[in-house]
Amino acid sequence: MEGPLLEGLYWDAWYTNKMLYNLKNSSRIYYESILLGVPRVRQLKVRNNTCKIYTSFQSLMSECYDRYTSSNEDTSDFGLEQETEWKYSTPNTSSPWHWGFVGVYQNGGFIFTLSKSKSETKNKFINLRLNSWITRGTRVIFIDFSLYNANVNLFCIIRLVAEFPATGGIITSWQFYSVKLLRYVSYYDYIIASCEITFCIFLIVFTTQEAQKIREFKSAYFKSVWNWLELLLLVLCFVAVSFNIYCNIQIFLLLGELLQNTEKYSDFYFLAYWYIYYNNVIAITIFFAWIKIFKFISFNKTMSQLSSTLSRCLKDIVGFAIMFFIIFFAYAQLGFLVFGSQVDDFSTFQNAIFAQFRIVLGDFNFAGIQQANRILGPIYFITFIFFVFFVLLNMFLAIINDTYSEVKADYSVGRRPDFELGKMIKKSYNNALEKLRLKKPQKDEDNKGMKGDLAEQARREGFDENEIQSAEQMKKWKERLEKKYYSAEIQDDYQPVTQQEFRELFLYAVELEKELHYVSLKLNRVMRKISALQY
Image 1 (cartoon, rainbow, N blue to C red):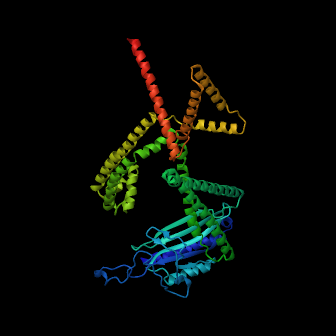
Image 2: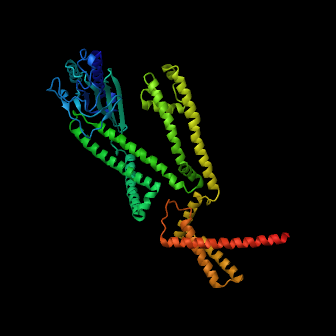
Image 3: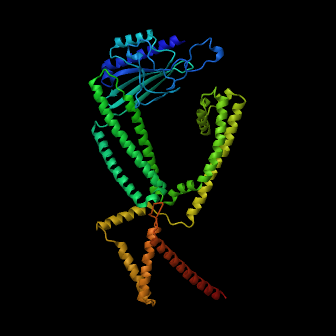
C-alpha cells in the first residue's frame, strides 16, 4: 500500500511543479500573476519506536511510528547526506506552526527548493523517489509558493499539505491567503494612509484624555465598565498600529532580498499569517467600538432598558446556565459515546457539543443518528429536544421576559423624563450660535423677565426685600444642585462627592423637607375647608 501512495505523492508534486512552470511561461497568465522566487518542499518525520508494541505482536512487527509531536520528531540525517534535502533544518522560532487535521506541525524539517527549470525539477523528484525520501516515518509534507498579481495588487500565498496519519493513508488540504501586502500604491491607498495618520492622532489624543481621567479620579475610574471598555479599545488600537508598522517593515526587507536573488524561496507565508492576525485584531476592535455606542445612547429610557434588564437578571441567568450546561454536556457525552464511531458530527466530544447547538437551531441529521443506533438514537433525539428545546430554552426566555417587565414598570413609575437626542442637538446648536454671537441669548432674557415678574408679584403680596433676595438665592442654589447632581446629561457611572458638596446636599434635603411640610400643611388646610363646606 505504501508504494502506490508514495508514487502518487511524487506525481502530485511533479504536477504542481508543472503547473507552476506553465504559470511562468504562459504568455497570457504571466501578465496576470508572477511566481515570486521558487517553490519549497518540506517534510516532517517521526522516529522509529516512538510507540510501544503489545508483547504478543513484537515478533510480528519490529517498527512503530507514533503520531507527530515535537518530542517524537526525527531530527537525524538520512539517505544521501551530502544533499540538503537529506539533512535536518532547525526550525525558526519566529515562524508560525501549522495546525493540520491530525496534528500541529512546527517549522523546519527536511527541506529542498524546486528549480525554475522543468527538467531539473523532474530529475530531482525522480532522484528523491528512487532514494526513498518519503519513508514510513513521514507525517506531513508541505509545498509552499507565492504569487503576485499586479492588476489587483494582491499576493496569493499558497500552501499544499499532505498529512500521513499514524492510521495510514493520506489527508490532503490547502491554504490560500490573498492579502494586500503592498499597502500604498494608488491614489486611493494614499487617501487611506491619510486616514490612518488621522486615526493615530486621535488615538494619541484619546490616550491623553484617559490618562488625565485616571489621574483625576484614581481608583474610582476603574469602577465603571465603560472605562474598562475604553482601555481595551486603546490597547487593541495600539496593537493594530504595531502590527501594521511591523508588517510594512518586514515586507520592505523581504522584497529587497527577493529582488537580489530570484532563485531563492521567499517566506511570504510568515507575513500572510501575521496579516490574518492583524485583520482579526481590527475585527475585534471594530466590534467593541460598535458596543461602545450603547454608552452614548444609554441616556434614553428605551435604550437603557436592555442593559438594566441584563444586569438585573444576571444572577438568575448564571444559575440557569449551570443547570443548562449540566444537562447539555450530559447529552453531548452520551452522543459522543453512542454515535462517535458512526456519525461524523459526534466523532469527538467537541463536535458533539457543536452538533447539539445545531440541533437546537433545527439543523440535524436524524437519519444518521437513527442508523447508528436504532434504539438509543430516537430516545436521545426526542428527550434532548424535549428537555433542552421545550423546557430549558423556554425557562431562559421566561427569566428575560419577567425581568424586562419589572424594568419596564420601574421606568414608567418614579423616573425622570426621557432625555431626547433631538433636544440635546438643538440645545448644543443654539449654544454654539450664541457663543459665536450669531443669535441673541433669548433664554437669559426670558429668565430675567420671569424673575422680575415673580419679584414684583412678591412685593405686591407684602414680602420685604430681604425675603425676596433670600428666596432668589435659595432658588439659584437649588438650580445649581439640580443641574450638578440630577441632570440627565450626566453619563458617567460615578460622581465623586466632597465633604462640602455633601453638606450642600444635606441642606438641600432639609429645604426640600421643609417645602414638603409646608405643602402638606396647605393641603390639610384646603381639605378642612372642603370638609366644612360639605357640612
